[in-house]
Image (cartoon, rainbow, N blue to C red; front, top):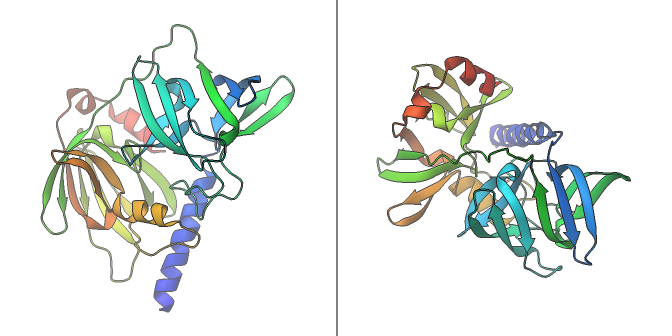
Length: 291
């Protein structure tokens, strides 16, 4: 029991430490229209201190980079903790999704416990620092540099082999809503860009441990070793939904039978499909992304 308690506490500390590393200065600009019709011109625009939105499309969690978004419209009522939204992307497509905005919304993957004050958009106006609850927003128009193209989407395809030997062919593979795998090298947090990786092999840790050793092999032949968080212990303050997603939907995507999800503890190997653009990326760029 004492060993398990120490291990769980280490997981909490690691997750808390990770959340602090997301503080950033955003170059984004936006026009925010609140529910009373007021317009706010905001620089250094962020959501929860980040440059992406945590959304759910067909019950699959995704992180949508704000640099891909042209317009965001809230269709729910102010008191709804889960609000229906419409995203108009810069490539002209439109996505309907659900976004959690209320005070009891589930935490971000790098946060422990539920939110206590609602989720906020923030930035700077000519009058000084600006902050507004997401539930008070009707519409947001992102102001991107003229002539700048939105980042191109990459659809990752992979074969996932489970610890039980089952094999799944998955498209649009994501790790907790994004195309990179967070891992630890000693006490230092790093990440692996999944678009540059040929395979990831997972090993079993010692009994009672909450982390699993991994070896990632890039298309260039370079290998990276570390550990990933694979805890199935419920953390203090986690909602039912956030606990289920953390444990059972670390990796998500689409399979032939529909939406796919699997927990970190259940994966044995991931084999990515060949992509020339990924295979030809320079090794020096890999090193820069890891740091």
